[in-house]
Image 1 (cartoon, helix red, strand yellow):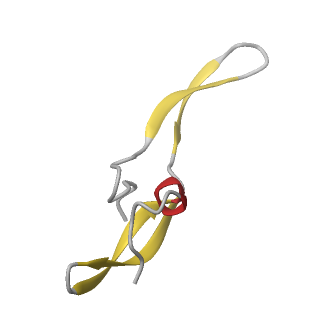
Image 2: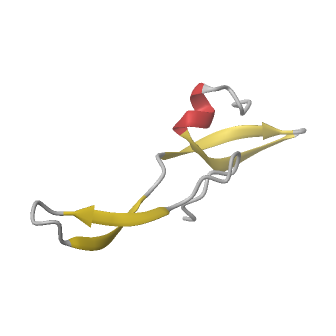
Length: 62
């Protein structure tokens, strides 16, 4: 599964986890994706869409 929203293209972001002693280690944040059945023209297909796009009604569900 690719960790990318099919509507807005939101993907994995990178940064640092900072401990109490200010030691920085690499970490990543994943988008909150849901598998949704979407109408695309006359077809219905399953795509991964982030919850932000779902709440904003940027996609027409089947």
